[in-house]
Amino acid sequence: MEYLAISNENRELINTFIRDHWFTTEMTIRGEIVDMTAVEGLVAKENDAFAGLITYRIRGGLLEITSLDSLHEGQGIGTALLEKVITIARAENCQKISLITTNDNIDAIRFYQKRGFDLVKLHYDSIKQARTLKPEIPLRGRNGSRSSTNLSSNSCYKTNNWLNLVSIKQSLYRSKQSQEHLV
Image (cartoon, rainbow, N blue to C red; front, side, top):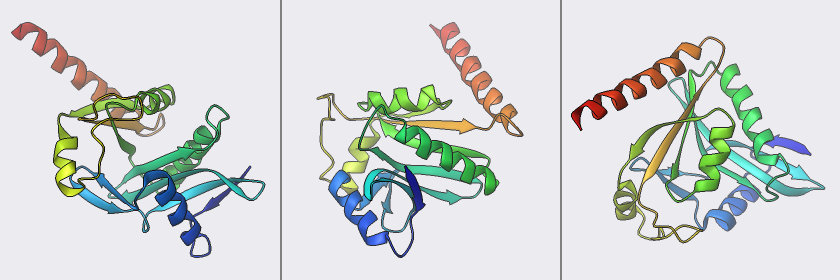
């Protein structure tokens, strides 16, 4: 497997890949339309063919994953791409990595949780708001579930930023305890 950064030389092929797999080159993330033709990323190639793609953007000490596609699930392509992006985040001195997925994307939620990401926020009914920007967003996901809510996940590193992750977990735990006392 060969891993290549998105560059001017492969940008048009990447844009076609994104269009073919996401049906557009615009992604709606937290009320913002992201131009996927301008994000950074890595492509996994096997025998000169695309096997996977991860895209991201870096802003203010945060690496945000904007998409991850593996054409051959269960073969470690997505994991390898994610690991390479974690290495990039460390090299860029990012404090954390974040991503958003929809409530109906159970496979993605499971994938990221197995790799150390924690669910940190639920954006209830945010897909309805996103549809005002992009009406073509489907009402139902791949598995037929209603797609209505975005879930934010974060991963902090177990080196200098381990305390950030611990404090996120503790604040979520305290929040849950407080809510239980209200019942």
